[in-house]
Length: 272
Figure: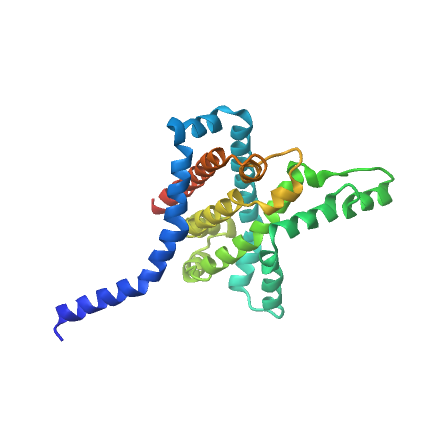
């Protein structure tokens, strides 16, 4: 077989192997997305105008953006230490620590929401403990505020951030850090001049992953959202409460566009 014929056969084999994935993407992504766009633009885009004009929809989108950004940044900061230790150190119980950190990824959002209620609900463990220690009531019902919802989001995103950063830190060129140390560079200087520039792409990728996951999170908000609404909850309400799939579709598109925009901005920063 000539090299050209071999290359052609390999191309056809690759196309056949990719065909099931392409069919799945067409059925599970392209067609539903086209349906959302069509429904959102019915009657000259009235659903989109309604989403942009109604204050509660804009508020839900802004709340989702703010909550997801805060959860992503917090999760990144909390994950740096554990990810660094898991990537660099070898110690007894290391695998157990990794398992404990990744455990929340196996929980559903609804379960996490109930866990936050158990901690910070009106008769939650933390309010009861504060009352027993101080004789004063505090944090009762905090689970249903922005703080409780934020805690639930962070609970989900820290394990995801740790796993992403650990994988990146394993590829860190430690010889550069060792060389800088032998030349007299202090820890802070090595971190600012070597560590952060090299780790910057991984940090941006972690932010993108955790932000995107938070933007689409629904189960936690379903349980905890009482005084604070987010876009996925509004979509659920429009679909199940009012059977308004045009507005729900338009809100889905707005949510997807916001998420994609932030992800692309982080990706552009990664290429620079």
